[in-house]
Image (cartoon, rainbow, N blue to C red; front, side, top):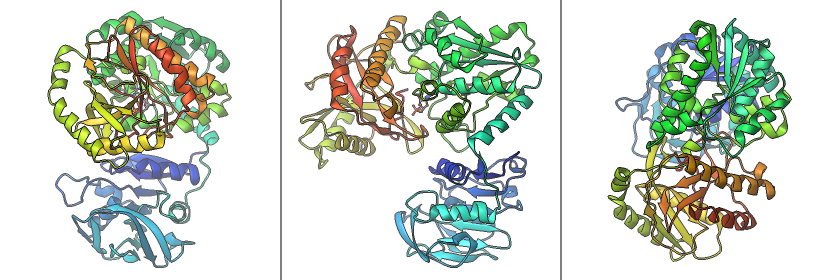
Length: 608
Ligand code: XMP
């Protein structure tokens, strides 16, 4: 059975994904996220359209424009925030650009309308906007008003168009879920029934169609996504049509490659070919410091190896299967209005060319991690495999920051100025003043600020008293948000005194990967021993080339997340740190231990 679908037009807003997951998970209706410039053919057959919010002001030059053909489709459309402004402009209404911005709660007085069925007349809604609609277009009526918005909601029952200035998708809008349900189910008439189980049948069908008679090569890292893809391929295709390959990149965790085959025993019918390409990866990364360059090199090498393996098969006779997830596409700038934060290894140019040629199948590309895990459970994969913490495709290659003498030189320029700002920020903070000391680290990491990439400095913090984790987390986000030039904070836990760190030249080498493997092993084992592994969503361990004495720094980054698009720091018990810190400091090459205390945004989960 094919599912009814709601299309969400992504105007670049923060909540596009939230709209999508609300419709999928709460209402059990399938969604697709499309770009505003999409051809109408991409929206063929959808039951309704939701236009998301976005950061632009509609009258500004270069603001996101929607393909008018989408607006003219004969299906119900609901515009939210910027989407409301798009509707108003399209139909000849009046939108005012305003320097007055409204964030937070507002009281909505509403008129009777099918979209407000079951919603009390005075409702609390959540706003985040600058522009507002002053006059409704012909054919529309005003159905909601707040103190600041003369048109907080409008509708045109004949053309089946609705628009809200507020955000029904956030839980702060008390009856937002009812409004979305009224639209999706009541107005669009979408049939519910999109469940993971039914989704599996659809994915299997799609794999068969996309693969046709071609051989399918799948790379298996041992992580959740590629394992679930392998199980789906097994379900969809006869033995002999698939080839499963594990590439040892030299950037894997301790004993990872040797245990992958064993772990995959549970999924049946997997004949794993293991390729040791560690030398190739390590030598290609020699002397490379730029994180994006590393990702591109790693992504290309994967393709080169696959091409080599497939060289006995004609190009038209094989396809590559990969476990790309939804956020990978979005964060790699895969949608028109999203900035490139990181080019995920499965989105590098050579792969994009293969995608264009129809040579790649991505069975779980519309799903979030949590949904992939549900698919894995439904397919009967072992619990441990399905619930492994995520591990990035480029592996430890993006968890060892690199820098050469030129980068060190440019990094040191201007660092004093940033240090001054950090000190002011600490002094002026009510909680931190007198309690916390901070030093800008002479190294740069990747972060995400205001939907854009940042490549800036971390700050090392020392707290005088016993660590107040909730307070330090809040403070570090405050400090980063208010201070230009920094994008994350780490709390020093394995070096008691404030002392000056020196930048050191470091690259990816086998020895350094061995050191990182050991560090990661200590942290992973510690999490398991303290029964914390499942309460942490992901916990990267990162080597940072700054030295306090004779080694470099190791950073532990435990986070909780749901969709990897945002993350908060997991607070782990002191006993865990008391246990792992001496073990980390005992490793030759490590001279300090820190815990990353920044949420995402402004930090990203990984440091590169
Ligand atoms: P960031 O660091 O952007 O990461 O907050 C979000 C999630 O994506 C993972 N990640 C990757 N996964 N290839 C992957 O397969 C990549 O290039 C890549 N980069 C980051 C990261 O581990 C986290 O779960």
